[in-house]
Image (tube, rainbow, N blue to C red):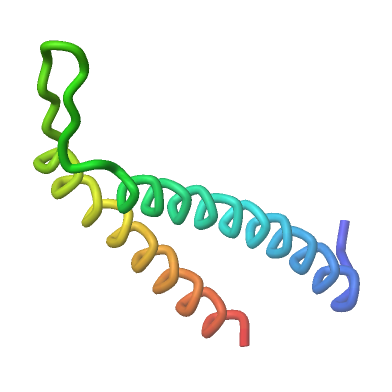
Amino acid sequence: MQLSSQRLHSVISVAVCRTIREIRRDMHKQREWRNELEKMKIGNVVGSLSVESKTLRASLVPVTQRTLEQVGHAIRQWHHCLC
């Protein structure tokens, strides 16, 4: 089965759009996580327990930031290849 150039372009466009939608959804989720981490209290007292989340927060913020940067870089490379 041989596809015409126009049909092939259409099939590729649909696949790319679906993938872009998925990437946007994933990036939105990463941003939500980053925002939640930024809002996270450094410490909290619950009853007789003292909970410190400073170390956890400090270790997770770079993960979300790095992921967003890597996805952005991958999108730019992908766009460059398509054009």
